[in-house]
Length: 133
Image 1: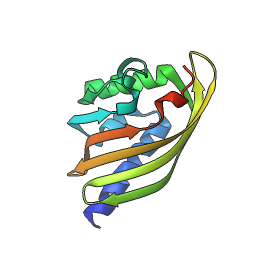
Image 2: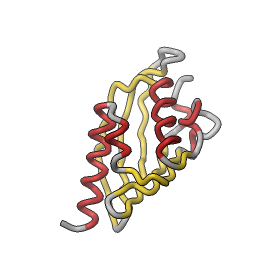
Image 3: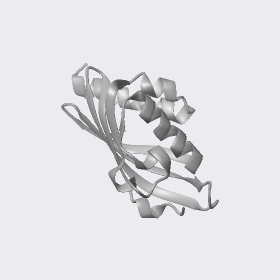
Image 4: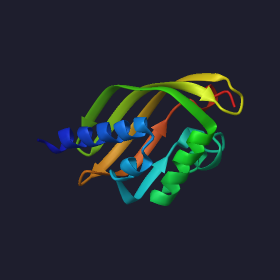
């Protein structure tokens, strides 16, 4: 199996773990010093969801802030493009903003960089204005 195929499998396992709400299983595929950022969410998303992260402790806080802010109803990766150490995934996700009870329906682009079957960098791109906070 090629490195690209292995990287795609790792990211698929990350999404499976996320779908179960299993953050420790997600972190099993993430390097201890990984960077994790949603640049369009900075200053717009609550807590660590809207801040750059480095390492497992901050990534756990990212997931905590995300869970406190939204109720995920659908998370559907529908296209994966991979080359060398990069895996790019297009995702439709939807749910409710807990604070307002209002729905959201957003296209996400996740850009993953892997080394030795571990995520070393994650960039999440979405329209931060699409969430009705």
